[in-house]
Length: 328
Image (cartoon, rainbow, N blue to C red; front, top):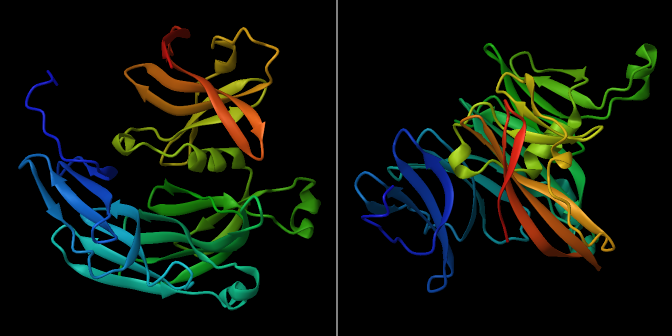
């Protein structure tokens, strides 16, 4: 922390952090071997150990849990065949399942394939969204929300129309919240339309919920930074109501209001003649402060945005005092 005993390990991307084992999971592309390389950085021993992934041609890292890395393995990107494989820190390997879709039969005509869109591991189960994107804006075309135990047993699947979900715990129960369009006859009796479903994994039942679907989308859009994995509560999400408000979603599913009207606390740009957009990123809570970035962008056409400024703020929550740390 004093800037001494610096160690340089090269250009790696951090995939995961295990604070108990004091290790990082790192990734980089090898131009010499034309493969993705994954390794374990042991901070205590100050050494890098390569994970045995060289037998796989193409692979994507998706999740880390309790000493195991979970990958999506392909023979080629257009095959439409996805293999879920776990590799332990000691090099042990296990293939959990292989997935494909009947929709992949039309890929040659429409250039559409389905693959793993999201993966998460919680306790002894793995959760996967299997589907595809299509169109000029790459819209999600629907698919399946799948779960099974880490040994590949107890397979379950349910249809999903969106590529987002949140996993919460109610005591020993695992509840999966995800956008779900209930048929009109299911909600017209109560004069209330439910746009969220809750999947009770223990009983394998689905029931409606008024859980704010914006929180599910925001959790996916504002991904948790690697070093925030063990920050409680998590994650921090934005919701546009009367103003821009910040909420925290605890593991139990309880929604906690963190800050309100942060849009009124930031410094607006003086060039008001420019029609710019404002985005809030990298929300982070520590020691009574809410840290966040505010990015100003300008639309330049053809789905292209140009960043013109980014400000970094911190807000002391008990005093509602906002301080601009720096701009760039």
